[in-house]
Amino acid sequence: MYQRLLVPVDGSPTAMRGLDEAIRLARLSGGRIRVVHVLDQLQFASGFEFCTVDVLGLLQEAGAAIVGAAKARVEASGVPVEAYLSETLAGRVADVVVEQAQQWGADLIVIGTHGRRGVRRLMVGSDAEQIVRAARVPVLLVRAEPVETALPAMARDAATPPAAMVAL
Image (cartoon, rainbow, N blue to C red; front, side, top):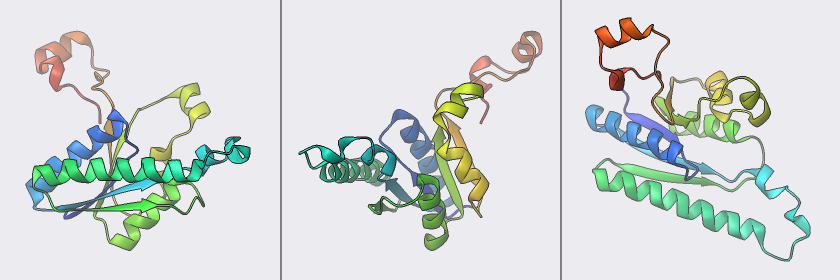
């Protein structure tokens, strides 16, 4: 069973859904969680370089708040937790997450994902997809919202109630 679950968080409801799933798994396995937040260099390099506001400082404060809230959520569940805030601003978010999983010895990476497809995924990109491709450990993707499967309605309704039909 998974003992060391790494969970990237960005403060979004989707990330919190992934964190909640990791908490459930850690409770079942007696495992521990490491929450990770990565300061995204693309946010930093978005034209604010010439602004008089300390954008990097604001990003660091926001990152610390995100990690703190995620850590508190896990602590409230009684699961052992530690936190990591990446302030390198070098490389892709996915690369930092994969590196952290390897350095920490994670058994599983749990990620909340929007499940974008088609042009939306192409335009927005997917850190989750990059992590799945690069990780050396299993990756559990947790969708932002339940999605019905492609089973025909009659077969779906006869087999199980719609609430149980969730694609992971």
